[in-house]
Amino acid sequence: MNKDKVKAFETFYKQFKIRNYKKGEMLIRADDDPQGIFCLTKGYVRQYTISKVGFELTLHILKPVSYFPMVWAVNGTPNVYYFEALTAVEVGRAPRDQVVNFIKDKPTVIFELLSELIEDYAESLTRIEHLVFSDAYRRIISVLLYIAKHFGEKSDKGVIVDHRFTQQDIATLTGVARETASIEMVKLEKKGLVKYIDHSMIFESIKKLELELSSNHIKL
Image 1: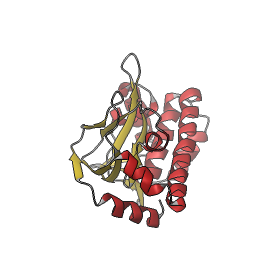
Image 2 (image 1 turned 30 degrees about the vertical axis):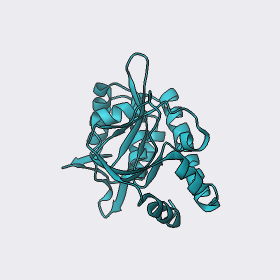
Image 3 (image 1 turned 120 degrees about the horizontal axis):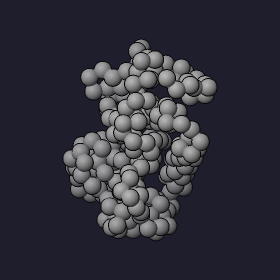
Image 4 (image 1 turned 90 degrees about the vertical axis):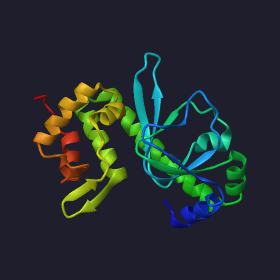
């Protein structure tokens, strides 16, 4: 995200109270009107939906610095998603009308927000493609690549994700049962494509993970 845009929003949000949420606490419910636009400055927030039979599907994981729910803010589309603290989080919350008034005469800010939404949209299309056409193994790989891209930091050991995404987290991101996610993750660990060390995930070779996604995989 553009540093100038971040700086502008940080300055704007300083006038509002900082709010803290514990892991598992709900920031926005799908059946309530949001109380404002959130600015996520620390931690991760999970955006998800629940099916009629109670099945959870994680649509996106927000990281700093993110603003949500922006679609509701800009055009008033009812929010139908849950936003839950995946970790301990710190946010600012501003009234919708003040956010809209702040950005409406700032084309650079609008462009950056639009660019971010388009990027999220493109990634959502890719994930939907894998959810529909791929087996569980490839769904898991596609989500791991998503995690590595959004939350990983490059090091001499590969790409390191400091937050340890659980098997349940992986399951809700891929639309499979936790037991299925566990089985597929074990396969990937045995191949050395992902490692867990303490509270971190390590990807020694993103290229190998990408090749595994495109290979003619045969279930073990």
